[in-house]
Image (cartoon, rainbow, N blue to C red; front, side):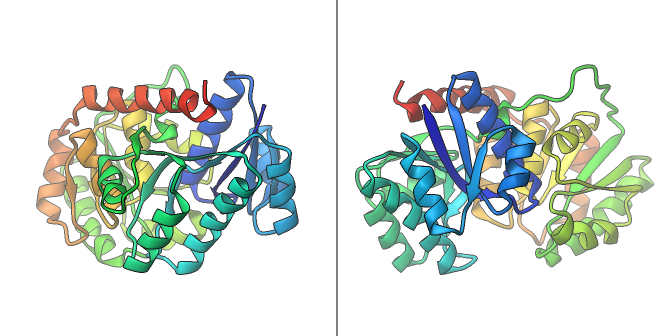
Length: 323
């Protein structure tokens, strides 16, 4: 069986590449051949040892779907029109094409929204009769309000594991900013200053180098780690004692590695994950004293809830493949 995977792959975003890594590994373990639609298909094929086609070439997308039995739309936060209506148009068009070709279509472990009223109507129409699996309870509620039934899964990146044999240092804290959330960056600079005054070693982790590097450098941390490699990011997190993340996959990889974390909810998907995980989350106008205190005390999430997410993420592959 071959499965086409539609998402935000090949753009140098470590979070989405973590999803790609997890999905390709899990599909191969189930003797399924993954085909990722990517912005950089040659690099994607080389990195993950899978088939890949250019995501913006209609003939290539059509050919990928013709060679596949299933389309997984996801993971990630694809069905939203906050960034632009074109984003939503693209992902819905891939779904519609797959349905026209009578392929099995599954919305796979996405977060849904934010959506404008018009965007919500478009999503509801496109997903009628589609198997929908989302990664947080907030997305279940968002879709229910649109008349779409969704099943709760989990982010595939929760299934990734750190390199064996790493040693954790409780005195290390990772802070992962996002380049376009400047109000949070200003407050995080104060958080970093407080943590360093308390003797913590702070690493500013840039998840999307072209986008996040200036924000990471501005935090005045002990060091900056800029990477597109999800395993490098996961291992750095696994060696640390706490994570403060604006980037969603900073906190998801923290959960995957057993590292406590705090989220900065620039988007509902961050709040949704932290709520489901029983972890603290703050608005972008966060209180630096409060957030630094959480890191110093190493406030724990609900590890049982995170394990439930991991189990749902694994089970979602069988559900998506119809097995």
